[in-house]
Image (tube, rainbow, N blue to C red; front, side, top):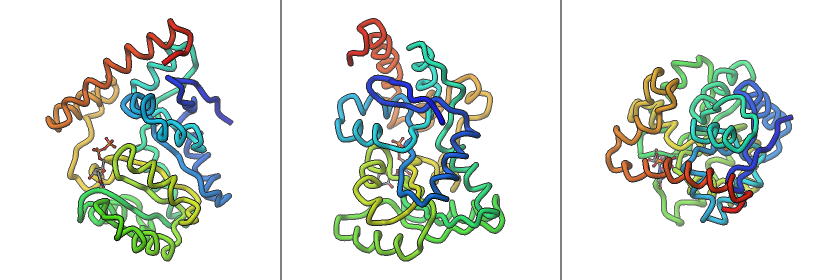
Length: 246
Ligand code: UDP
């Protein structure tokens, strides 16, 4: 249904939010055990030197363009990319439809207490939604069998994994068949935003394509990560001029 566009060796889907939601619904109907990844500039840059992440992204059912940087890169490389599909917004759209479609959703990740707060928020925003389980994202290898057993027992249609990049993608790939969850999405800071622990950029900044700047300002310890964007821009430009060599 959608076109894959090559950005620094990562195949990103050129599609609209409405199309991404339709695909997500289809995966849940088909019970296919697939992953949707949400690729911003930082993730794509990381994937250029993290081979496992690159493989995971290129095997994912869908890689949505999460971030102004990703959309810019597609355009700079001469491809069509209709719009940004932010992971946070995609998760909200799926949750909005969840009560009428009777979807079961599991929140996995973020600091202790955050997923429960996000669940309460989801129940306020989307009355009738079934958040069938929650679990924080700080665990040891010994905890994993218990986490897996809990997810299996709750039979979610959708697993939202908020463990940060690339931990969430690697965890989903390692366990998705065993879990038998039709659709898993790595959603980064989504539960933090829902729980009110972290703010999203105001609309005007999102529209001005400055959400990355807002995040860097809000979390000074992440300020170093702001460098990812200029690095990404340079790399994409070289990729174009050198004929797709990273
Ligand atoms: N996180 C987690 N377990 C970890 C590391 C991070 O659950 O071992 C959570 C963290 O609390 C936050 C989310 O992952 O809620 C996303 O983290 P961050 O914003 O650093 O990652 P990004 O998605 O931007 O890479």
